Every structure is written in structure tokens, then in C-alpha cells.
Amino acid sequence: MKDIYAELGVAKDASQADIKKAYRRKARELHPDTGGGDEEAFKRLGAAYEVLSDPQKRALYDQGIDPRSQGGAGHASGFGFEDIFESFFGGAQRSGPVSRRQRGSDTLVHLDITLAEATFGAPREVTIDRADTCDTCEGSCCSPGTEPRTCDNCGGAGVIQRVARSLLGQVMSTTPCPSCSGFGTIIESPCSECAGQGRTRARHSLDVDVPAGVETGTRIRLPGSGDAGTGGGPRGDLYVEVRQKAHESFERRGDDIHCTVQIPMTAAALGTVVTIDTLDGEREVDVRPGTQSGQTVKLKNLGVGHLQRSGRGDLYVHMDVETPTSLTEEQEDMIRALAGARGEDLREARLAPVNAGLLARLKDAFVGR
Image (tube, rainbow, N blue to C red; front, side):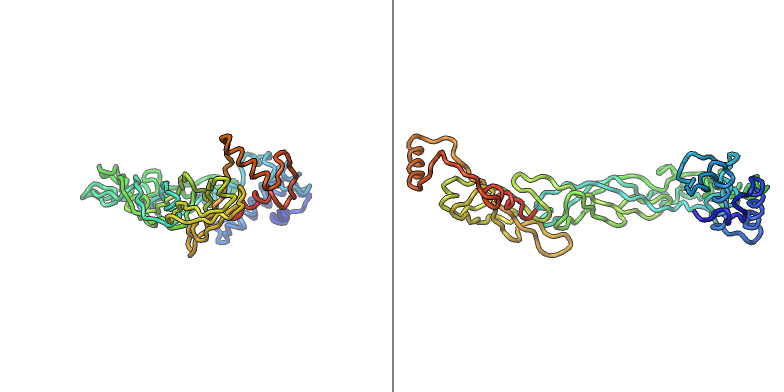
């Protein structure tokens, strides 16, 4: 905090009587009716007095502690700065009546899309219940052939002035008119169709273009497609929040797509070419001889389209080598013969270096995350 003693113009050892007297004097100087009204200066003055008029808050301030952060000290005499400021300036000030014509609220709907729609983009349709300008009164809120009348209580100003008592004596405050709720006019014959709101509700179907690259949580804004405002006010906006549904075979990671292909042990050992169904149709995948489980083949530009820019992510095909679990006696003999030809001991195992084997395959599996 700044030097609040200087704000009031008193010494640090000033008595409570001196502080109160200094506050009264400076508050009168800043009173709007004196021509020297300064709202910011009055705020600072009130904040300073709120602290120095309370012995507990003053003691905290003298110790270098901001008393406003303590939350336990109360206002002096039950009359705080906010009360004083409001009595002077009447809270939020208005120069005229409130308009019945207000902008409508924004509307949020959810749209479930497929991975293919997120990849390529797609036109979709959403159904919403929203407020529309009343056709009967055209937003005027009045029954056809009638119109609002000027409020007798405030004369159309929407506010009334009242005299209130404060530490400085009698001051004038401005408050919304209770008769017309601050509108300045009264609707004596409200529209029966919309109950005087100027709008009704109806269900609509709207077209929305889902761009490529959207993901769960992405919001598409449709300006002017939300609720109609009260009193014939303009519409708010419509936000369509996308939720991407899970795919049976593909997993999305950013703009890349991952899938797993199961291949026989013999195909992994000898190498082959397999055909898989991608979002772009059938594509061939080259399985090199000696392929191990966890190894990955990258198919470029077969992933999700980038949002608001050209290009696409990639498709990563992870290999899962299937080891047979049920062999005939003849098949077992053939595998034993193969092991013998390769000089392999079926009971032998050795630790692989950290840059090979399983750890290397795990690293490959996370490429493109």
C-alpha cells in the first residue's frame, strides 16, 4: 500500500479524532457537488480511512502488513469505504434508462464426428433449440397495436434520486426506478405469444462445415446463430463443440494415426507385402525380412489433415509378430530342424544391449507421438 497517512494528510501518531477530522475535511473537498469531485482520489481517500479508522487494521499497516489481505478486520463503526463510496456515487451510475433491446446469449451444442470426418473435414447438420424474435410482436414485447408508456415514477429516466445520510451529512444517490425496473417505460399490454419477452423458442437444423484437423474440444463458431436477444435484440453466436468418436482400428495422436498389423512369424522372418485398409482406401505395407514385434512402418501423408493449414499427418503401422501357440508334431519337428540349421540352442538366452531388442522396439513404437 502507499503511504495512507499522507493520503489523509495526518502524522503517523495522529489520534482517531484527528484522523476522522482530516477525512471529513478532504472528503468534502472531493465531494462531487463542490466541483472538485475526483472519483479515483475519493476511492484512495476512503481506502486509507477504512484502514486508519480501525485500530486492528492500523496496527497491521504500521507493521508493514497489508490489512486488506487479512480478511478478519471489520469496518469502523460498521460503515466501510464501499458504503461511503456508494452513498456518494450511488453505485454504478447510469445516464439514462436501460434498453429492453439486448443481445442474445451465445449457445453451445455438441457434435459427435468420426475419425474420417476429422481427417478430411465434412459438412454436417446440428439441431438446436434456440430463441427467435417473436413473429407476433416483432420483438417489441407489446401486444399488436400497443406500445410502452412512459413511467410516471421516473418520467422515463429509468432512475430516481434519493437523499441519504452519511458521515458527511445528506448526499444524493441514484438508483434504478423500482416501478419500471430501470427501463423508463412500462408495458401495460404485453404480447401474449412471447409473454412480453419479445422472443419465443423453436427447434432448428443448421448446417456447419467441420474443417479437417478438428479434435475433441475444438469449438466452431457460427456468428449470429445463437439466441435472439430480448426486445428484438441481435442474436448471439452459436458454438459447436466437436467430440471425436473412437475408431475400431485406428488411434489418433495429434495429427498422426497409429494402427497395429498382426503378421505370422513366417511372414516376419521371410518378409512380405501386406495390404491394409486406410482412411484413404487400400494401401500396401512393405514388411521387411526379419521384422520384429513393435517395429513401425510410416506411410506419409495418410494421417489427419492439419487444422487451418495445408498438409496431413502420417500413418504409423506397428508390427505385431504372432508366435504360434498350437503346433502339430510335424510342425514342431520342422521348427527344431530350423533351429538346428541355424545353430540355435532352444534353452539359451542372453541379455540384449539397451540400444537393441525390446527397448529399441518401444522407442520405435512411440515415434510420431
